[in-house]
Length: 155
Image (tube, rainbow, N blue to C red; front, side):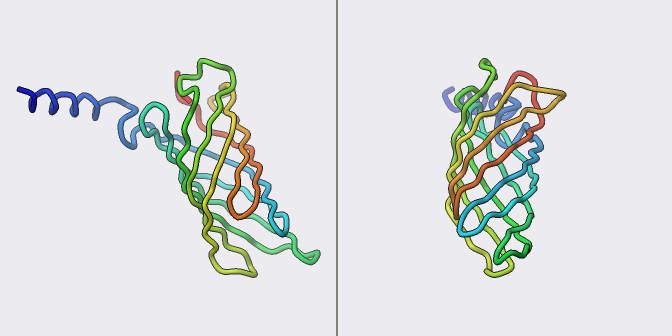
């Protein structure tokens, strides 16, 4: 009987929209990176709900850095797990923190992997999007302005 209860609970959990990788959303972002030189980048990716409080984001971006008064290309790939303090959007602005990994490519260096820590605040929905401001550390500092596709009743 206990086995049947566990199977029933697993089926019910799998049918909920927040289970597993259900509930994907689009993320668009603009970032300012500061390490030994400054760079800017634009990026986009997908965010998956991992339960009520967790989000897993995979984001790629490209931009330019300025070194010796000339611009050159950069690119990055981030995989970040975010943990929300207000997943049901009960407050106007919801805080979150997270950790993951980033890989950066520059014209002067091969792929450079770094651990990534982020902290941010996601705002109220406007026109089907939720704006956010995010600060990160990983291979330098970053400040990002983020737009995430809004979902009804959750962040």
